[in-house]
Image (cartoon, rainbow, N blue to C red; front, side, top):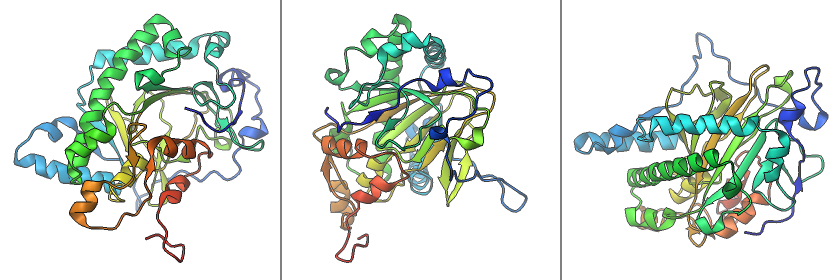
Length: 361
């Protein structure tokens, strides 16, 4: 897949952060970072919803209530913690262990997989689209993992064997979970099951391993710029016990406290488009800790490259509501998304159909 040329931010924040007397370089300093919500007696802290996978697949009359609950959560929040998800706990723990080992490797080893100009896969920092763009306080490794023929031969195949094999097994298990979730999420909003299958089966999938080093002035930086994901859904694993993920709900930033053995599942832009606005892609960000590192592993699920990204045909036919979003072929959708820097939900706004006055339909 060819993308427009971009500037690449070289080096490693992890290496930079080893300087104990560090003054944060100006290109990491965020001048206008929105504050995190501080609870009080009249405004207690909200928690993102929790869904038990067993409740969704149990069948019977209770399942209808759970489908309504799933629809409501995806509409009002666009994110939930998934427990009893069925992915083997020992595999998850092994995946965490191998990822920690990856980021402990000498920088020379990690740079074998470094980003190159004009590419989006590999190890490095924020992809830059302008010389004065701010850089996130994080190192990342991002790559496409499915379809298999789109994998780059210099990335996953060249990983240390234990990491490569563990990641392969993890991808297969989370892939099964992701497809099960698509079926349920589609069913909850009355999208035809066959249509969901045709869009997402053997679709584009990718992973991002992220390392957030400690920062002596954490309020000056951002670990991950506020944005909504371009994907259908994202399944996120917190690798160590340091929190940092925050979601924007009703205009305020709320910290996410991960439950043990849970995945975070969030609705992406494609699912909001597919549901014709019934579901809500959640805007999120990551902050960093003053003394502790944080690591996470995200898996992104997208349609096939040749699939249309637009409001569901079966949903439009059954509701007779007008489409609220444009339709693009997936490959074009990705090119347009990756040609822009992350910035809230601005790309989703570009996908909305406007009337003659420039207002949303």
